[in-house]
Amino acid sequence: MIAIQNKWRIPTDLKGSKGQVTTGTPVVLTDLEDGTPCGATVRCTVLPLMDLAARVVGQTYTCRGLEESRFTLDTLLLTKAMEHVGKVKDLYFLQMAFEVFSNMMERFSVAQNERFVDLIMAFLRQYFPISYKRFHNTRDRMFKDLCILCEKTMEYTMRSILRTLEEVCHIFIENQLKGFVRLLESSTSDSKTLMKKVTKELAFYLRRNATFDVTFVDFIFILKKYHTGRHACIDVILEQHEKFSTESLLYLAKREHEIEPMRVTRRQNILSERIFELIRAGMSNLTKNVGKSRMLHDLYFETKFLVFFMDVFARNTEIELTKEEQFTSFLRLLIEKCELDTIVKVFTAQKYSMEMTETVRNKIGEKLSIRISKIFLKCLTICNHIYYSEIVIKILNAKDLFEMFVPNGTERFNDMVNVLKEKLKSKKKLQRILTITFD
Image (cartoon, rainbow, N blue to C red; front, side, top):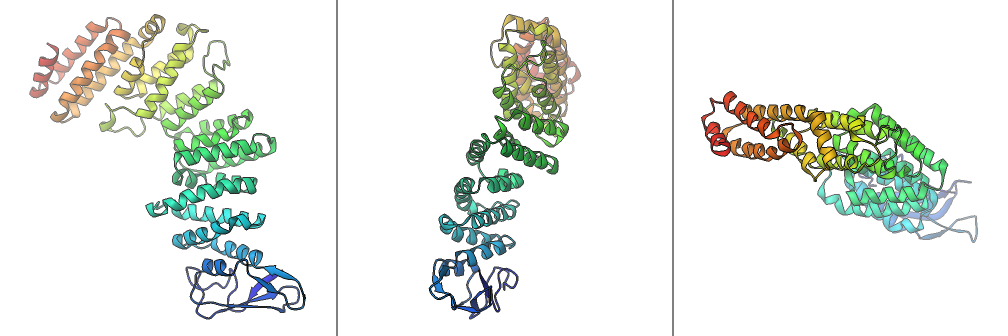
């Protein structure tokens, strides 16, 4: 076994914040068995540790006292250098270290592969708060190296990725994240032991972290074939759904439904209870961060997922919608929690059957009329005159919604316009626009 002695020991006595050694510092190789020199001394200029590694790795020296025995410096220098580098708090140095070690990766032992994973994770943790554009090329190279490392030391790499998920989800782009998910899923799907370990790591991460966004959700589906573990993770999410965005919860519900479509847990339900609870939790989060400026504006991704579930209910042929509890709850949540554009788009995304239109009209038609009227009144009360025309156009767009889903829709729509005129009669410019448009 080989070690480094004298003024430069890796990692404890390394000089300089960037892992540099002073000019002329001798690096003497010794045999740990008897402490005798191995006949090799490297005398450095002021070089970063990684440059030294690049220069000496692969060179062969003769051990004094061991006659014809020969060894390389791979285990000696690389492993110890990696152990040190993982502790260095210097992003540029870590980038340089990564690039040097990446070129040597195909020669690494198992232990060196694991230290290389640690180095990458150390880089991601320091990169996370700043995300400089200059590191994007390094990020792409790290993705490729991590995919290779997953094949070489799958369990260690998987655990490291899952324990650094916040940084991984923030730094890597969507296609790369989906690549990690596919790779980890294919690597673990045949081993129940590994899937249990994935479940444990994901559950730990879910309980530890403060917030999550939609990029995290795909990692739940590493457990695509392990329903018990996936459901356990979803249950943890439901316990603390306030940490998740509406988009991420609705996306999770959509992905789960695609795995188990039309999974009826009780005869009167179209969706599984777990999926519907995700929808309910997502929609309950909608109003938490909605300011005045968003009252009329569409939430694109949230709307897309709500349209998807409206279509799931519409395509149902097994259960009578008038008796479907989930459908009724979904409609109520939709008009109570969502923005105007979202409501309009969900209800008018497609031509629904006569049965569904009638069901919506009977169950929430009155509430829909009241909700839309209140939104328009509030918006026109607080907005500047430059937004009048935009809001009046939205009022016109809502007319079809009234006619389709509100009892006596045309009459109720005209009543709403008259109420707006009456309550906002002090706004002369608005009065002129409403009169020209609706009289």
